[in-house]
Length: 89
Image (cartoon, rainbow, N blue to C red; front, side, top):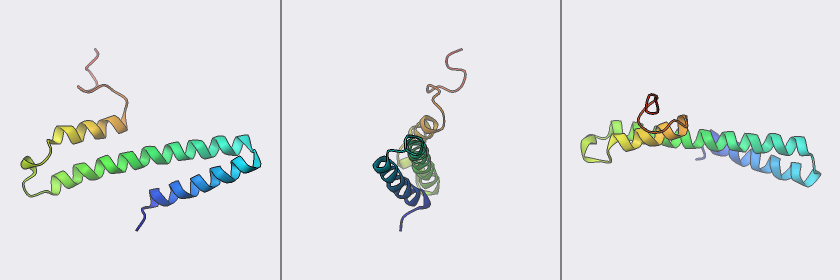
């Protein structure tokens, strides 16, 4: 079953295609922004689900290091370099 994000991505892709066929530049720009936002939300959802799955694993210390999952989540949430908000100060 498709998630709401996947449904939105498919809808926006169709919307963008229709806008391009009409040559409506404003609609094309809007649809491209919506697709970019939906892609970002999808990446965020994927990273968050990985953290939750790690948490729910009985032997979580034996699976992928949580730090890797947090870094992936951090990369989606903000463009800050790894090492936290004070890393460049």
